[in-house]
Length: 252
Ligand SMILES: NC(=O)c1ccc[n+]([C@@H]2O[C@H](COP(=O)([O-])OP(=O)(O)OC[C@H]3O[C@@H](n4cnc5c(N)ncnc54)[C@H](O)[C@@H]3O)[C@@H](O)[C@H]2O)c1
Image (cartoon, rainbow, N blue to C red; front, side):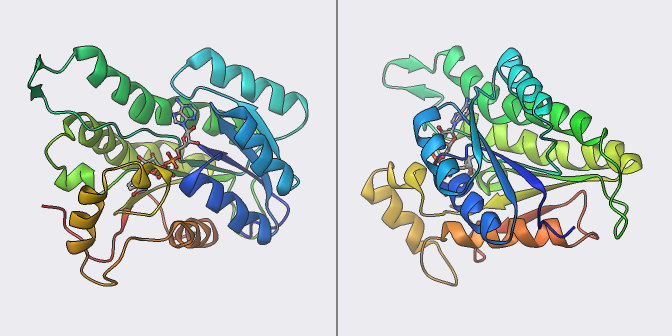
């Protein structure tokens, strides 16, 4: 689909991959809508792009439903939904203080996996109300964000890897289910991209990850994620698949 003039909803749009994708797609003519729990930063990003931000906790059904209700009341029906909201706390399953609190595990699953599903289900229902585009017969495109940790999680990533493995697993069944409505579902599994999430990790961890980069031998750039998201939107044959965006990195 040609993004020009269509509404694009980006969760986690206040920072990192979501914010960069908002800038990139706005330059291509998209109308930007951001969902984030950090409303003041999301507002700054949205206002600079002539878009709109909503305070949303993706892990909460009422919060997401309310934001979609407000949006559609204003006749905003996104053709594209990009799920970037996520968290990445690292914690051993059994640490010095004993086993990880179950609530820590549940929180990561609730935000990264349940949160992605929560937004995807209502985004899909909203897209179903749109007419199919003449040129491609599409009603919409959903792009979720997993991680290469879904495949090669490191020590301390049991919860994060489980949450991202769930996002990978949802891709094909969601694409199959939504195909008859002309809605595609794709997932991007980034390697290590230089964003505030990554920069919050200890320098030693970042250095070790860069050492594992094959080519290019550096951290990924957020615009490389945005470029792929844009290509997925434009290429109608991409559906039901997970694309690694990692410069051949395999985390050890
Ligand atoms: N940066 C990387 O190296 C990398 C690698 C693989 C996957 N990812 C994934 O990409 C996505 C974006 O990561 P990023 O690096 O841009 O991180 P980031 O921390 O820069 O941005 C994440 C955004 O999500 C928002 N958010 C978090 N929890 C939320 C919630 N419950 N409801 C609404 N908003 C919420 C935050 O406020 C923030 O604006 C995440 O899902 C992350 O797991 C990142």
